[in-house]
Length: 323
Image (cartoon, rainbow, N blue to C red; front, side):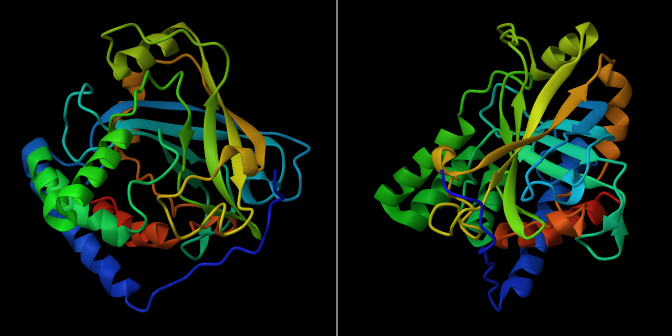
């Protein structure tokens, strides 16, 4: 196990601002087209599976590299959670997809990653340990094709990368999208992309607590969460995984996993959803603007994909009329 390091850096290309603005315009066009079909909604992660209210308890006795920002002192914060499918369509849960777990933590006060001050800290997690693309340039070449249809995506991959390269890229895409997913009570979620943790850099992970029974065969993810929260609480341990060096834990290459064996992991809190009727939170969580940049400067998002998300999320929120 390597020691956490503060020697991380970001590499910002001269053309980033223009590219990111163009990507945001493309995503807004996709959002507008999908909203005309399904009604107002997000560009990606359009289908909400469940929304819930709970608490995040920050633990005491954390090491210095974890004891930063939100995690600087023990306490209990209100938390809002949105669980979703990743696609721009409101498709069946049976279709292979990325599953999202967004957490917005309240009771926060301090300098904001966006300037000024903030009273919240958001983390957006998925059921993956790496991003589908190394950077936003590659990702944004895929999204418009994927938004049209699976066949258009296949055609794009083979047209761009040739027969062998297209097959390899298709296999990688389906390896991620087709990853078995049992449900929110039993799966681990990761921000995949890094955030600062004071002078250090981290990724955030949620690991389910307790021995949860498997989701009943054929039950939807929504009904599974609803039924579990009707019977009792659900809890996850929030863990931080730290940057050690550029070769092992790259900041700018989003397609690289941070290897478990070499990445320091620190449990920092417990996310608890008490028994509740998830239908009562559905409208509020759907309207909430979950955003990786909505948070403390101490936890500002890092890397090129996160910088692209800063522009894209703002544009999406404006497209939904909530910014």
